[in-house]
Structures are given as structure tokens and as C-alpha cells.
Image 1 (cartoon, one colour):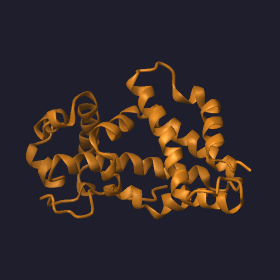
Image 2 (spheres, one colour):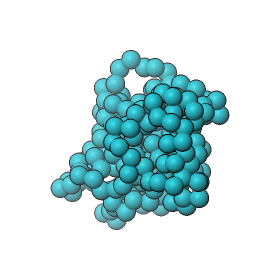
Image 3 (cartoon, helix red, strand yellow):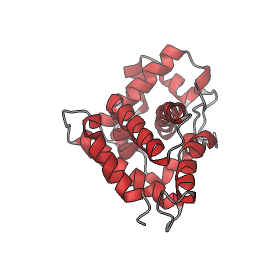
Length: 213
């Protein structure tokens, strides 16, 4: 199920003249794979668009035509990856009413996804500053917000989750724990998958978010 269509940042003032969705699928996949490889093995400023073009076996003109700039290219690849995660999350949460189980399933889906795609979280934390996250269209996805932020608000309304702070603070706590744990897991090159620690990690997350009363 595809709930969202990745796109470059909404302003489209970067010089790109065509949308990536019109590119051949195989070509786009090579570009995405090259971006993830290059930007997780080197500093953002040391990677040039010609490096991406060479690894993906496309012309530099093609990169400029569809993405316009290095920042737009990285943003598109991240948004594509996070959109796929959002779709999985929404699908897995359908039909689950219990707040604790919905939160548990959310964490499981996220850990499973980044176990399978570790370069995504590394690039996200290394190649794009946090204040630019809202430039990624997936962050404005109404489906994702209904599935995640709506879950937190519902939990607060039912008295299950901490309602002494805003739902956005709960989201920050969840993402703060998750983001740091996942980022350091891969930067330290830990050999075992994150899911092996799932029960312990969820216990910590649940302890941080549940209603203390």
C-alpha cells in the first residue's frame, strides 16, 4: 500500500526541471543506492554530484535535471526511504486499538526497518541538519501523523500516556530515545540486529511515555 509519494522539497526552486517519479525505476534505484553508499561513507561536503553520477552510471546532467542540487538529492532519497517506512507503519497499525500494543508495534516496525536499511538512519543523522527535517514531505504526511502523533494524543486522552506534557513532547522523547539508540548502534558497528534487544528497548520507551499515575 502506498500512502505517500516522495518528492523533492516543496519549493522546487533548485533548478530541477523534471520530477524523479518520471525517471526509469531502475535508474532511480541506482541513484538512491549510490547516494546511500556515498553519503554514509564520507562527509557530506566531500561528496560531489559527479561522484553520484559515476557510481549510478548516469550523466551529471541527469542528476541536475531531476534533483537540481546535492541537498535536494539527499532530501529526496531520505524522503523516499522514510515514506516506505511510513507505509509499513500505517499498514501494521491497522486494526490495533490497545495503546500499548500500538506503540509496541510502532517501535518494532521502526527497528526492523532500520535493521534492514542501516544507511538510512546514518545518512539522516550525518547529512541533513535536524532543522531541515520538516522540509521532507513525509514529515507533513497526514497519514503518518494520524498513525503516530494521533496515537500519542489518543493515549493521553485515555489516560494511558503521560498527559502532563504535550503530545509533541512525547513524540520528541520517543524519537530521542529511538534515534540515539539506532544511530549509535550502527556507528559502533554492533554485530547483532537491534530487534534482538526489542523487549528491553520497548520497556524503556514505555516507561518514559506511560502515565506516571
